[in-house]
Image 1 (cartoon, rainbow, N blue to C red):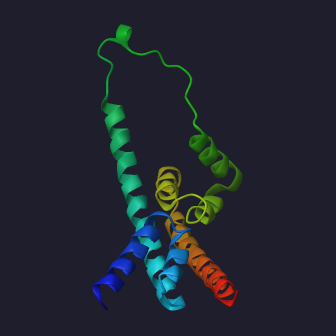
Image 2 (spheres, one colour):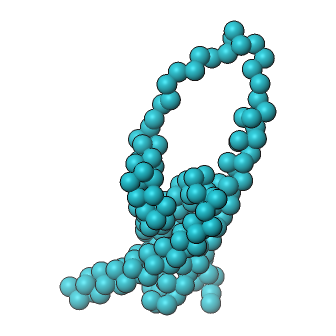
Image 3 (cartoon, one colour):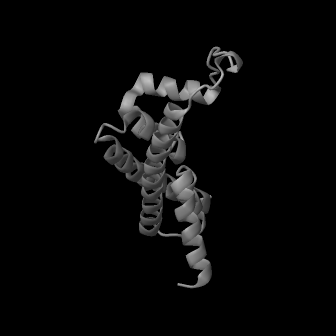
Length: 161
């Protein structure tokens, strides 16, 4: 392997750890075979899931500990507690969680929701469930397989055209 090939492989690996939806298409465009595309994107996606899941778990614990230790020194000058501000992203996450639950979140994380957001939300809401992390990993590998097949099919259509 030369340096350019190594650089392409690392780029696809890192891309699949953040946004899996685009990685198989980029790997196919870079000239990777089916097996290499599947291997690199699956490994990158699973590495991203593991990294962001445990990072989200750690950050959630740290923020919980920080806010539980905070005390209001002067209650008269404390900001008034108003209504929570819900952004479009927060509403989407709550809607997915209520409508689809743990299985829906695991299924949508690699493709529709990006891996960092889905893994952190999973760690935040489902860290006590031992099935969440294996479901995320299985879902990532399945999405890699489907997206790799799809990108190779599109490549074949373009080449035949």
